Amino acid sequence: ANHLRALGAGPETRVGILLERGAETIVSILGVLKAGAAYVPMDAAHPAERLGWIIGDAGVSVLLTQERLQGRAGPLDGVHLCRVDADATAIAARSAEAPVTGVAAENLCYVIYTSGSTGRPKGVLMHHRGVCNYVHWALRAYPADQGAAPLYSSIAVDLPVTNLLPLFAGQAVHVLPEEQPVEALAELLRTTPLGLVKITPIHLELLAGMLTPEQAAGAARALVIGGDVLAAESTRFWQQHAPGTQLVNEYGPTETVVGSSAYLLALGRHRAGPTPVGRPIQNLRFYVLDQHLEPVPAGLPGELYIGGAGVARGYLGRPSLTAEKFVPEPFAEAGARMYRTGDRARWLANGNLMILGRTDHQVKVRGYRVEAGEIEAALRRHPAVRQCLVIVREDIPGDRRLVAYVVGADAAAEPAALREHLRQSLPEYMVPGAFVRMDALPKTATGKIDHRTLPVPEYAAETGYVAPRTPMEGVLAEIWAEVLGVDRVGAADDFFALGGHSLLIMRLIARLRSDFGVDLSIRAVFTAPTLAEMAARVEEAIYLEVEAMDDDEAAALAGLEPVGGD
Image (cartoon, rainbow, N blue to C red; front, side, top):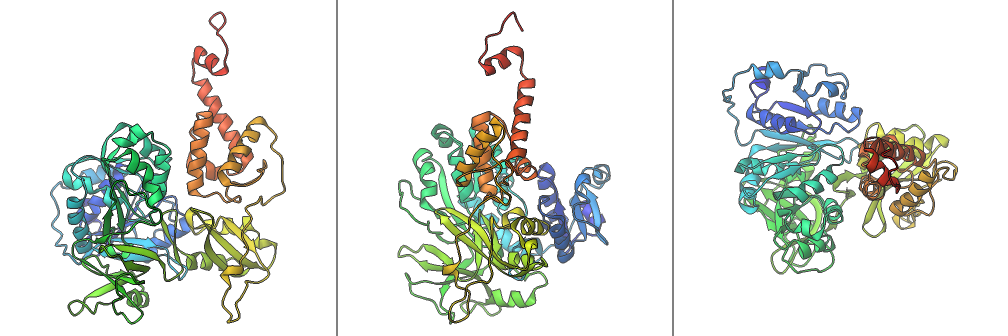
């Protein structure tokens, strides 16, 4: 904190955090806050263009990073660089006295960037008042004092705030590696009883397939589920096999702090469909209103507005958008504002809230908030794209995928070229799984795009079919076809061109572990996305495993009896 102060950090200044996940991540967040500044968390896996843009847009004055990452964001004109590894000696030489910052409740705590409909991400300005309100509530609502929590997800979203709660209660936080975080989380749950785990519905389902009922029974005192709609079916395994674990459905847009409401699932209720999001936490107010900002009766749908202590200051450098989304609260004191969530909702008879969907084009994809407009804007920057539309399709129940419909000028608008173009500026979860070329987008009689007649995408190879050439390629082709839900896979086929995404990567890695006993990393899937490349990686991993064995282990693996000690 004192080192950051010497570099000019203080109230209302913004310090970027660009680190690979580790103990330094937590130290850096706490150091920025103790210096009185606001932190701007970034994901080192995101494209360099996006990272550089965020640093400039946020007005970052100091960048906390590591020596190996300092070039990821491009030129840093006017930004003080603090490398937590290379500058460790200089940092340690500073005073150990806590700095006096004069930070007030309305000062900035963090700036988190979310997808933006205008084509660029937007920074949400969150103050200390809102964060402290959530922390004080959560420390009473969740068993943060009854065990450790894991930090396993990107800090570029606000989900990790919940998993840092045990630090306020004298407990530990286990920082899990960047590679294979879900596998690392599963292993932690097998070996270490945890107090609190904040998790997305997708990860909840994945863990259910990675833990035995006995392991799940004592894994955690509470699973706080957030980031996406929670279907009751996703909790069935945990309700059945971990009855001592609290299952909480937490809801809250980034604009109203991490969690704005919570719903404790009652044991034994296995009804189908979405789960309620409960009631607002302390010092927050929920309103379900009609188009005239009048409350609608319980049971009828309306748009959800949130008022109270958790409402952010607005969007950084976006006064028009701030005025559109943060509107006067007519039911509170003069000057109070409420956030227009864009979520359709209705009150249930028991006083809990049910989310029904969206009033706009914002979607959730694998736990991430995505504005289709940002993807469309990035697509239109490709010179061969004349017109485009990005939507989420759920052609297989429970499997939501981004699909881009593109009106292109020539062969330069082929899917492979468009996919590579988007990867230069968008994170992986925002790159559509399928690109459908069209002569024109279908229109209704009133001139609007007719979503009902958009064709179902075909997840097929972008190159000609090449039959698997080796036994390993043949076995992998069968695994890919099962994981991706396609009829056949060739040696030259690309995992992502066939509809692969981050969730399916996790399923593929799990299959490779169970079938071959090898741990392929997420990064390896991105760097070796074709069947032939992946087969080579798997064969190499198996070879290294065998090389590390002694003679008897290797013989046993091959089903041979040792002869003469060789």
